[in-house]
Image 1 (spheres, one colour):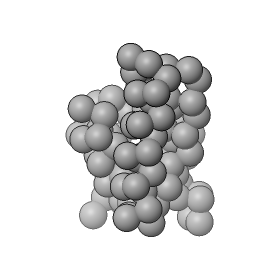
Image 2: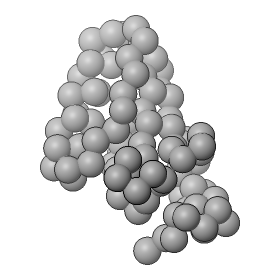
Image 3: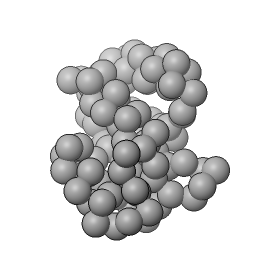
Image 4: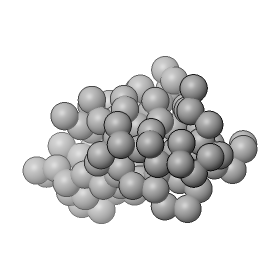
Length: 94
């Protein structure tokens, strides 16, 4: 398990998630899709995975650009749950 409160440990863990970037106490990924409906379909797939994991990203939809943001609000920083959800989102995007 990664000690995500440790900046060096989080930075090391982020190497496994090259499409994601750290922004303060969260991690984000922006994806561009071919059409608005493709974006909504992707959001629906992510929503299903989030429900299964009981860990939900913030999702910003801007026409064909989606931004996913993950943080564990209950502890105020990125946790292992966020890293796992980010990896799951990566599989859904690819």
